[in-house]
Image 1 (tube, rainbow, N blue to C red):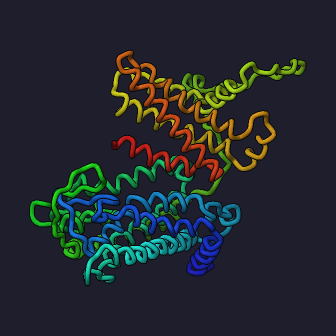
Image 2 (cartoon, one colour):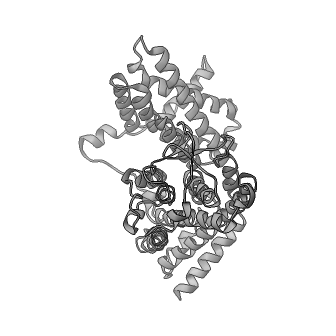
Image 3 (cartoon, rainbow, N blue to C red):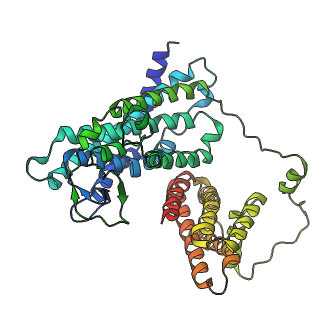
Length: 464
């Protein structure tokens, strides 16, 4: 079969499935809402973007770059969540993997559909930016062409690259799992920090601009006056005065536009590679470790059934039993227990807030999201409605159990002098993580959204 026909069929079917996605309308609203609350308004609202310790004067190109920053910091992780959990998440691989159709052609068709949807999100953001610009820019300062050009040049390749990563991560078994979400989180953080760490925009060239996947560093630094090329984004700093920033000079700097086109080409190449390395789905085989390590980690066979065992007696404290059950299910497995013991040892010697607490939460967020995803599966929730405890009681017990786990791992570091600081922080952080996990798993019926959101929140917690 012709490869173009296969790609066209894959594109058409994916777009039809996107058309039936109700979440697509919510996705189209994410970027405009983010623009409303994150753009740097003169009244101090939104995020601050400072160059050389001063706030740039608001111009149409700078507003376009600000919209691109919103894409890099807010829209990209939300779009990844949408691509991995929307109506195209489940594919008819049982049929496709037995046909002679080119996997590269199928991947290119799905990539094109994903890119069209994400570029539609950018179009909605562009319209929102033009509307907000009528309030933020005075007189004839509004230049729709420059605003749109800046936003699309900065954010367009990043969105296309995200669509390519989704296809690549769907091609390999390990990346299809929760490890893929963690790997994308690392890639996303790396793409934002790499150009800042390398400090490559002082002498703009194609090679230096290739570090800037997000695309906003060079426009901010290249057009700044000499000696003021350092910049800050966020809200935890003091900016004094204003600065006239020539954003268009940064957008037209040597090698910048070529680097944006190169990233689009790299995205297409990644999709082609994903088709070539595509691994068919197989029945999952439980990994078996040999030797003493395998014997240590193997939980062993379940206890034998006692056919004439008497009926279980009613528990003295049902609520405590429910909390204990959730506690055991969150921490199931010898690997988790070993890692939790290591975190507890770390808490005895290292600073809890900046070392032990992030380590405990990083370990726990995977356990919390996994158990919450299992517990909140659609069919299982319907079954648990006939249990003695209501589903809401089980969710409350889940939150309490999460707080107990972080508190338990913090006990070795809770010396009498600092116990009043460490233990409340440990309990509160565990309760918040458990609440986010169970709330998102209840809404989505899976662990994916909870795991990704918890990773983003964990990064924010570590950075504070």
